[in-house]
Image (cartoon, rainbow, N blue to C red; front, side):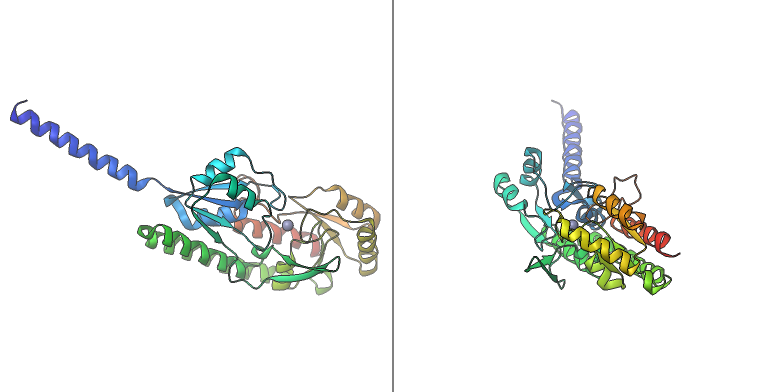
Length: 298
Ligand SMILES: [Zn+2]
């Protein structure tokens, strides 16, 4: 090889090294999230630096889920596993074990004040903390801090993305409060299938009543259904709402027996597909408050 050719070859080699180093740096960090609402939050904060795999997808029920071998493979390749906690993902321990996951588990709800309630004489913890936007902010901060700890080079990006998301949450919080303030107080009562809106109700002054408890695992008893039918008639509750994660038959029956109207579908424990009305955490709130307002305002 003559000198000139050597230099060209060396220059090409150095250029190649440069390109491959760039490709490596640009490769996103793999993380997993247990369900679609949390998956969207991680995507908002992680942006392009993070590739998020979500186990329970759009319209899926995060209380009951059968993990697949593909889930185990995705989890084994993940650096972080984001979970809601508060007893939502009873199926996760088994998935973690079978996958041989060696990364960090981050409980996004850490730091919120859990809502406790009595069901069948047992005290249970309500896992649906994301339905209060103030809690959503705590989730976002936990996600941001975990991403920075795992990928310190992305600190500025994660901080900027998180701030933008937090600003959006603040705005949505105002929108929700304004919309509820417009509803006549006696109409701020809603029936849903399972008890997924306790945090929402406490934060925004709306009463939610559900024949099923805080999990979808146990079905409503005939006694629970009869009790709700009596309550709807007595308190003249105007509307019942379907949920995207539960079967509509029970509420269809309740609506028929009481004359309450079906107010539409609320997104409780899962987002819609991306092209639907609730493809992100903030769109979910937007859709839910519009649906409630339309059914309850007159
Ligand atoms: Zn639920």
